[in-house]
Structures are given as C-alpha cells and as structure tokens.
Image (cartoon, rainbow, N blue to C red; front, side, top):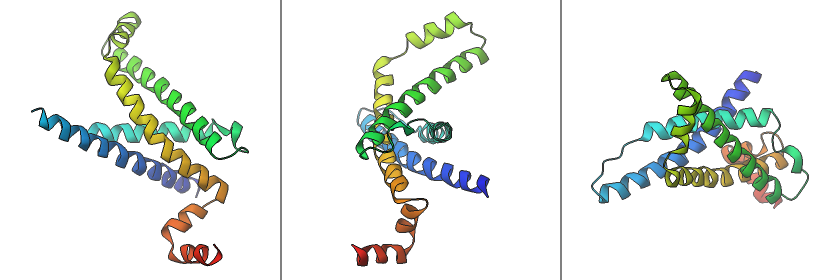
Length: 168
C-alpha cells in the first residue's frame, strides 16, 4: 500500500513537471523554428521531469524544507523552492560527474568541462526549474495544510467541490 502511494505521488509530480517542461520545449521549438533551427527535444524534457520528480521525492522523504511549516504558506513555499532548486543543482553536478566518469575522463577533465559550459544556457535552465517549482510547491503546501488527500479529493471528486461551495 505504501509503495502504491509513493508511486502515485511520484507520478503526480512527474506529470506536473512533464507538462511544464514539455510546454517550455514547445515554446523553444517555436522560437528556434523562426530562426530556421529544428528542435524536437521532448525526450529530454520528459527525462528531466522523471529525474526531478525523484529528486523531489528523495528530498521530501529526507524532510528537507520542513523547518518553516508552521509559518504563513509563502515562507515554506519559497524556502522549499530555494532548497529543492539547490538540490537539483547538486544532482545535476553529480550527473555530470558520473557522465564524465562513464566516458573515461578524470576528475580534472570533468571539472574543466563543467566550468567551460555555456553559463547562459545553464542559468536559463535553472530559471525554468525555479519557475516550475513555485506553483508546484505552492500547491503541495496548500495540500499539506488542508490535510492528507483533501486537495486531491477537491480536484478529482465532484461531491467534494460541491461541499466546499456550500460551506464557503
């Protein structure tokens, strides 16, 4: 039962991030098409969503970002956006280290590759992740305050929405 709950949670996080990243990829495709460049990297967007969903789950189970849970929702939301953005950067660096190791590079060669990266592109990707995390953590914080499964119930069950309207 716990595994099913975790899989369902992972799937919901993945779907949110996949929608966000695929939409951004579609936007990049349109902009680059106008410049005469073909761009169809939806697979990268889906892989990024899979990886970030796992990073978020790991961070949540490690109870990262729980320090401000008793404050107004804006504070834990923004704190989690920053903490999980930094965690995402850390995982990206680890990914680059492993990728370099697989390709037979030594540590200095890997660091040289990381430092010679296109920083404008990296900054752009970091901003996209940061912007994806803001609504994601806002919604998850609202769900946390409402209680277990209440937000899901409100979104996906008609009777819950009707009760809320009558009580509101």
